[in-house]
Amino acid sequence: MIEIRNLKKIFYTGEVEVHALRGVDLSVAQGEFVAVSGPSGSGKSTLFHILGGLTPPTSGSIHINGRDLLGMTDAERTELRKTGVGFVFQKYNLLPTLTAAENIEIARDIAGRKGPRSAQFEEIVKLLGIAGRLDHKPRALSGGEQQRVAIARAVVNDPGLLLADEPTGNLDSENSVAVLKILVDLNARLGQTILMITHDPEAASFAHRIVRMKDGRIVH
Amino acid sequence: MIYRLVWENLKHRPVRTFLSAIFIGISVTLILTIVGLSRGVLDDIQQRARGTGADIVIRPPSSAVLGFTGNMKGGEKLEALVRERPHVTLTTGTLVQSIGNFQSITGINLKEFNAMSGGFNYREGGPFQRPDDLMVDDSYARSKHLHVGEELDLGNGKKWHICAIVEPGKLSQLFAQIGPLQEMYSATGEFSAIYVKVDQPANIPAVKEDLKEQLDGYQVYTMEELIGLISVDNVSLVKGFTQVVIGIAVIVGFLVVLLTMYTAVLERTREIGILKALGASPAYILGILMREAILLAVCGSLAGIIMAFGSRYLIYRFAPPFLSQMIVPDWWLKAGAISLIGAALGAIYPGLKAARQDAIEALSYD
Image 1: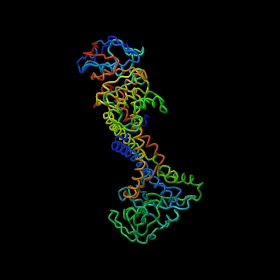
Image 2: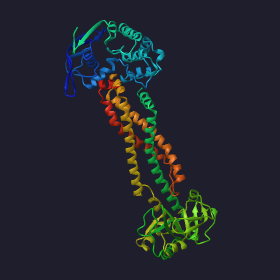
Image 3: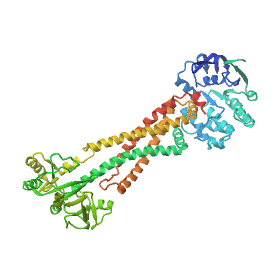
Image 4: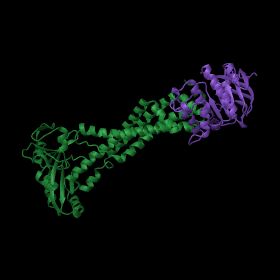
């Protein structure tokens, strides 16, 4: 599913060169649920941004389902984000002017999937337990509900890879467990490959495997 | 779904959206008012020209189309000459005397003028009795709240006595007897124009040519030619002024939308990042902003059309009586298109800024 070899990323803050990734090697199998942990500045988010096609790598090789991300143009990375990768963020990142349903549907719209809601849409909404909250705007939803809407939005286009960046970081323990169980459920039922950044060892324990990062490298 | 997002974005900031639409609307109103005023005033002049009943008009050599200023020295002699030409059945000379504020008194020979025009319809009062008698038309009387028997000071050092209020549409709004008016302005025997009635419509061109030969240098028009000249396209001042107003409207629309969309882009930085993370292309982001700008322009145009009715009422109520604004439905689409162009131009820079925004930076924006 994912093959990363000697991945490096350098970016510039003013005139300062920052080596965010210093040679990452990682393999993730199809349907695997991997937690990525590590201190701030260890390169977790940069790795996610590269995997999600939000920023290009500087060197190395990175393949998702056989597609090489290194040589991708901006337009190709945009295409990857439409249907190849789904994001779940710590701050939910729902569009505040749209309802829960519309927040999910806009992901379909961007992916060019017009028309009535699909059976998959209904199934995901049911699976996530948000069927009764679809007509509410984000401000009327609890943190847990917002995160479930965000998960639904991330998987509605059936992406090969789900990237979750601290998905429980803003939630209380009860909602955190609920969200993590949903991720496990998605992984088990839909065979969804998931990479999850987390600082929380308890959250990480829900994954099949934990990968630790430090100073831009995978340490074990 | 994109239209839903556009609509919700505009609804999200109702005051900003309302004010933006109103400002765009004002520029649309400006266009519709100027075009409506131009047409209204020129249409009024055309109606009054037709109302004389004349077939041909003779004017001094250097007279402008819209200005009846400039007198013919020895006008009475000229009129006598014209009256003797073949096929000419009636003639009458008039003297137009400016009283400022684009208004004028027209001196007429009432008997001759009635014979040519079919006579005045008196709403109040009757024909001239005294040298200082003044007849005013209904629209002038209404705007100045005048009645027969009242005195009117037109600022020319003389008080006029209102002897009649007449139906509008005949040459002028203010009429005096030509003799006293010539005397008052030391223009005895002078005319500003001579109106000519011809026996048969078919003879009008021949009479015109004959008069041009006889009156070397004088401007001789058939009434239809004169009316044709009194149009927006032929009055360069009005045409130029309208173009300037259209330019201003485009700039106003451009600036309003630029400011509105720029603010919106700054405010929605994070949301733009979210859309990018979902795979929205730069064209998709630009499309959202352009649609918002177009929707603002459409709403603004509708508001502008409605406000044009308001400006018409205000002009009718408070402006000088010679100003009348027509409602110009054929310009609604044009004015809307002009505001759309301004709005689209205004949305380009903020739209491109949004489209080029770095997704990671945008997502970390608070």
